[in-house]
Length: 81
Image (cartoon, rainbow, N blue to C red):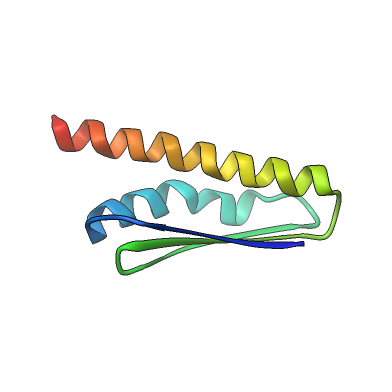
């Protein structure tokens, strides 16, 4: 199973901050799961490959989206400060 999540931001700085928040998942993934996040301009791309269970795959997508949400709130808080 594979998924690619692409999220666009207004600035490269916002995209960079979100990408950096997600990058630790690139190396901490359990066996059978590959997660890769990169920034391309103002976009953050996360690729997920799962060779285990469907529930693992869906939970991983949910975890990534939760991490994105936290990162976006942090960026917003810092920007507004």
